[in-house]
View 1 (cartoon, rainbow, N blue to C red):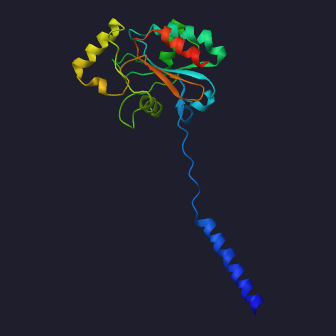
View 2: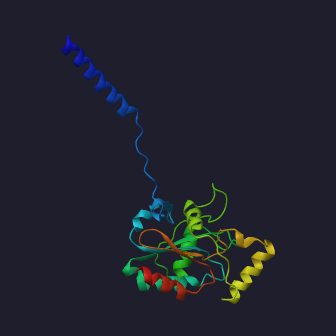
View 3: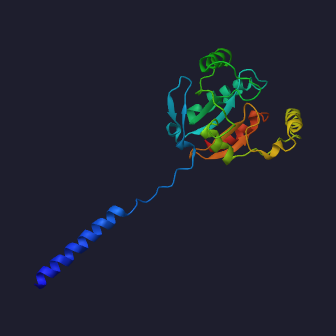
Length: 216
């Protein structure tokens, strides 16, 4: 009789353990908080995981083809030619939100950039960098959160002073909004996928190159 009771107790314990294992929720894995968590579309609409760029130094730029800053494509290509062999990539995101200065299809934009500036770095599909949650690129929502707008340095450049004046006329508190202000805002990303620095459109390529070289 004792043996029967012992066997029944052991069976009950085993059954209890099995039920406990089934009801316990799996441990949650924290999301990776770097640029590699995002997937974007290339210029022909194919998905591109930014994890493909893991281990590289990235410069993420929102661009336009009919902007006063459009000639910066020349300097971007020069940086790419100089440092791509060392693990540097530029990710170009055309955006038509600022003065509608990036009209046309993705194909037309790419033809313009390759024909006029001979770009060879990756050019992605046109996106919205600002806006409501359903419209804004998730990548850019993350970039802005990591490196919000810190103001235009009006003492550094006459262009910065003009931009500040233009935006302040529209909204006296514009500088409290963290979003992208204009075409050719740049985000520098290190080899671990972290945002290192944000460059406003008027900032020259000397500081961009200097910061880039520190990460290579």
